[in-house]
Image (tube, rainbow, N blue to C red; front, side, top):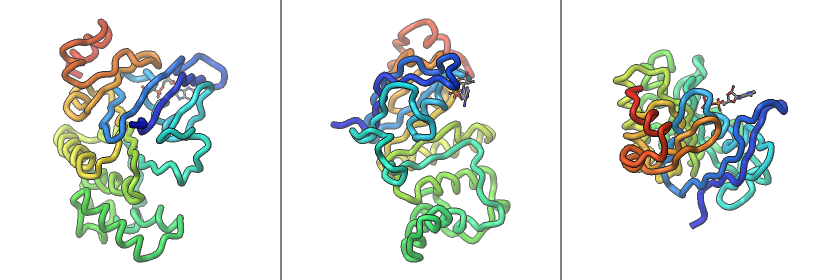
Length: 240
Ligand code: ADP
C-alpha cells in the first residue's frame, strides 16, 4: 500500500545556520496513529510543519499519497491541524467558528450546516453550536478546535501538543476523545508530544526524536521492551 506520507532524505536548516533536520526518512502508514516523541528542540514541530507544507525542505522530498507535496495545491492536501493554542474566535459562536473556514471557501449553506453538525457530533458537542467559546470549559474549547480541524473531512490530521495547556484530568479526557476520533474516522493521525506516557497510551507507532533524527520507530510495547539505544531507554523510562 502507498504510504499516506513519506519523507525522503529531507534536510532542513533555517537561514543557512545549523541543520535542524540533517536527513529524515520516514514512511507514515495509511490510517495509523503515529506519535513524534522527543525532548524540546529535537525537531518534532519542524517535521510537522514540513508535512503541513508550512516549511519547505532545504533538500529532499515529501510525498503525500505518493505525490510530491509541493506540487499539490494547498486545497488538495486535505489536512486538518490542531495546535496547543487553539485560538477560537471569541466573538463568534461555536457553530460560526466551525463555519468560518467553509465560508472562506464559499461552500453552500446546506453543506456548511451538514459539515458543522457532523463535526460537533464527532467531538460529542452536538447542541453546543450556539454557545460562545467563553461559555465553555477549557476541555470543551479544545474539542471545538478538534471539530474545526475535521470540517473538511481531512484524511490526514496533524496535532502539535494539543493537550499541553490542559490539566491532568482534562488531558486524559481529551486523549480518549482523540483516540475515539482516530478510530471512528479512520484518519491518519500524526501527533507531536514530549510526554512519554501520552505517547505510549495513544499511539500505534512512536518515532523517538533526538537532535533532528529518529532514534527509533516502533510500536509502544517494542519501544518499552526493546529500546534501540541508551537514549531511547532513558527517555522512555523517565516519569515525565
Ligand atoms: P521540538 O518541536 O522538538 O521542540 P522544533 O522543531 O520546534 O523542536 O525545533 C528544533 C530546532 O529548530 C530548535 O533548535 C529550534 O530552535 C530550531 N528552529 C525551529 N524553528 C525555527 C525557525 N523558524 N528559525 C530558526 N530556528 C528554528
